[in-house]
Every structure is written in structure tokens, then in C-alpha cells.
Length: 422
Image 1: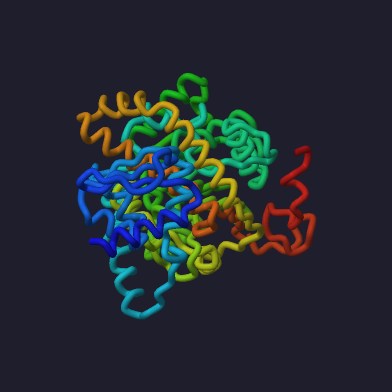
Image 2 (image 1 turned 90 degrees about the horizontal axis):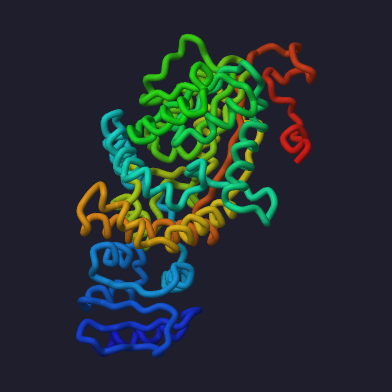
């Protein structure tokens, strides 16, 4: 036990903010005026801390085996320093790859995907409304100007996507995984498209239906409760967006996912895939238990691929990548904005969550989300995971129909249009 205490004291001495530790029998180690205090109910939690198993510490917090006091920003500075090394690891052995593929296959049937999406997104609309922007855009914002508020940056992101897709009045536009409808509404109201959104979340579907009625967008916007695999292919769409959705598709289904998009997209059309990407070349969860924590408490079935794998699967499906933009630090700032908003109203968040369950379960959900938002902010800032917007076309095979010979699509092969007037 003395050895473990010496290890803990050595850890505390090297941390960027003052941290105190309360031991299972009440003894306190560390400065009296610490910015962060960790209180352990049993010695196993201290061993977890000494080993730098951040994900396991997070689970102990959610399950009330550890109590945390202090700002989430300070806590994450501590967490990053406790790690024994980078959590971005690769294991390329054939057996590991077989196991990952088998797990991916088991977790991504249409039925399982629906269950997993509802597990996360149907927690409580009112809970999400506490910390998202007024449009409830639950994906990386775009801080075009550093002084933007979160709400301004989310509108900038919506417009950035619409601009990249060159949306035009009357075009048929599909949003795969449309969330609470922010992009659907923005595209219909500002670009005049005929917008269709699909989701597996019953709460989101009901919310967007109400918004369509309130805004008088019947006939211009349609929201459907549907798996992307079941989307009708007979008419085709001029433009397609998938924002913060393909993380749920699964490695084993990624080729089929992009093949489906290719069939849904009209020849010459554009598709924007905006999503989280892995920091590791080979598919793997974040180490130190961090990936396992997110899998258990936040995103069951979620899988991340390196951007190079995403581009390979898109190309295999017959989609030509024409532009890729890395927005990783934008997501770090977005997540900190969400985290700060949630931290500012924890009592109200607890009350809201209790309306859909009991107080104990509500408190557990709240603790999980507090760590999830702040922890993900840290991982994006550290560069352990990324966020890429990938714009692609379905070449139409016509070499002379566009202003630039060989374009074979609506894309002008010039980035100037994306930023005109901004």
C-alpha cells in the first residue's frame, strides 16, 4: 500500500493544476486548496489512477465509486497528464482485425443500429436543449471568425456545408442522419431546396415534424423515420449530406454505406460526408479505457476510421473525392462550449433527466455526459481523434458538359466559390 501511495504522490507532484486525493479511510493527500479533488471509496480506484486508466476512472465516477470536485477543464488537464502515453494505438495483427470485423458485423444490423441510436439520442430532448445551440445542431461547429458564439458558429457550419454542396433552388437534397433538422431547415429556407431527412431517433423525428409545421415548410421539408439502407433509390438526389452520422455505420458496413450513397446520388451530383475520424491508421478504440467508456455509456456500436480508410471506401464505391477539410480544433471548441453550458446548469439537467427516469439513473446519465463532453473536447485538442468534411462527386462520364472539360460533375474544381462573400 505504501508503494501505491508513493506512486500517487509522485503523480500529483507532476500535474499541471493542484490536485488532492482523499483515500478510502479519510486520509487526504495533496494541497489543502486544490483545484481538483478526487475522493476514492476503495483502493482499486487508486490503482487505476496510478496506472493512468482514464476510462476506468471515468466509469468509477459514473458508478459513484469516485467523487470529483473541480472544473471540468482542470480535470481534463489532469487526465491528459495522467496517461502513461498516447491513447492512439494501432494493432495490425490478423487476429485483432478479424475480431474487430466480427464485432462490427454483430453491432450493425438495422435492428441494432436503431437500438443504439435511440439509446443515445432519445435520452431527453429537453436535456440536449440545455447545452446545444437554439437550432440543436449536434455536430462540430465552424468558427469562421474566432469571436463567434456557438450559435453563430453553428449557423456558419450549416452555411459552409450548403455552400460546398452548391445547393440551388428546386434541387432534391437528402440529409442522412438529420438530427433535430438544423441543416434541413437551413437548406430549405436559405437555398430553396426540396429537403428530405432521415433518422433512426423517434424523438428527433417527432421534433422535426413539429418544426416543419411551425415554420410552414410542408411540401418543402420532409423528415422520415428510416434506416439509410431502406431509402428509395428510384428518383435520386442532386445533393446529399451526412453530418455526424457515419460514425454509427460500422467498419464492416462502410463500403455498403458509400455504395448506397452512390446509388442515391444523381450522376454529376455532390455529397458531403462530415464526421469524426480516428487518429490511428488502423481501426481501434482510444486506449486507457477511454474508448470502452464511450462504447458503454454514450455511443454503443460507434466505430471510427482513419480518414485514409474513409477515402478508400468512398473511391471503391465510385465516388470521387474533390475536397477534404480538417476541422478538428473546431470540434474541440464546440465540445467545450457544450461542456461549459451543461456545467452551468447541473441542477436543471438533473431535474430534466428525472422526468424520464428515476433520480439515481438520471444522476448516472448526467455524470456520464459531463465526462463525455469534456473528455472529447480534450481528445480533439490533443489530436487523438479528428473531424473531416469530405466533399465527393458521382462522375457522370460526360467530358464536355461542364465549363472545365473533364469535370464530369457540378464541382468547378476551384475552391473560390466556397468562400465567396465570407
